[in-house]
Length: 382
Image (cartoon, rainbow, N blue to C red):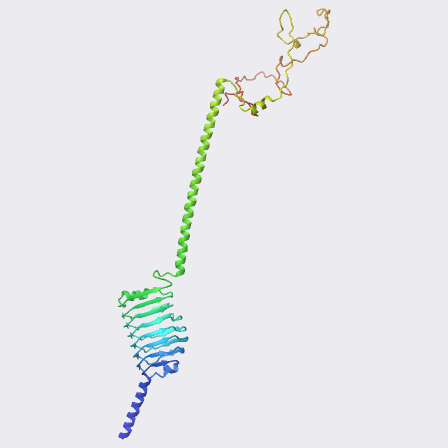
């Protein structure tokens, strides 16, 4: 009876010893089978590493504590890591360089005695550590995050450096800083939004808009100044033209006044104009008629207009008074000359009809200026 009891106790001790050997030491996990072998371990005594050859999703069931560091590093095909029961890690938690990692679930992790590093995981967009309360070293986060959640974080001792290249701003962590969660130095930067919360594209758009606005304002100012210069130039030209016209009118009035006083027509000053005036063809004047003596004096009318004057055609011995045909037969007459009857220098001369009730206009003195193809006008014209 006693021997059987001793055998049972020895067997239990052997099982416990074998179980402790699996949960202690430097443990590595490459597949889910390696993780399942730790299902009876609630505490890992030593470092726990998920190797770079791990693939797919790795779940760590029933593990509540790790007495050492937890490392998940440089994997190419690892998609997800889950440790739902994990509460504390006495070393550093390192999750870096995992190209395909998209999910990291440590929902109950409350204390990390070392640093918490989650860096350079290109496809890890969301990081939720709502159970985390204390990090005794530093907090190092970098990546293309769209969501960060540390709702229960109270104390971070050491340097905290967060670099985000995603669309998430630093406002979430800034609130924790304001609440006193970060005991050491704290810095948070966003390469896309920066401190202003704007993306690089938005900043470029704002800069381009400002530049275009400034250029538009400069263009409008230049156009207004140019228009004002044109208006001032046009006004000046108009004033100059008015002044020149007034001066010319004054000169003309003075010349007319001088002509009105002197009565002497102005002649062309240019010799070519004088030659042109003198070269106008004129009809030659016919010689004046011979004076007719009657009673020792000349007649008041030209001899050609005296009726019956035929002394030039009758002989000397003819008695003019006894000739009955003195006024009956045709008698030759010569054409009157311009000295007798002044004639206009024109091809045709027409006599104006007599108007009995014609109003007599006051005589005007003509302005005998140079004839330059323009009509003469009265000096006293309006």
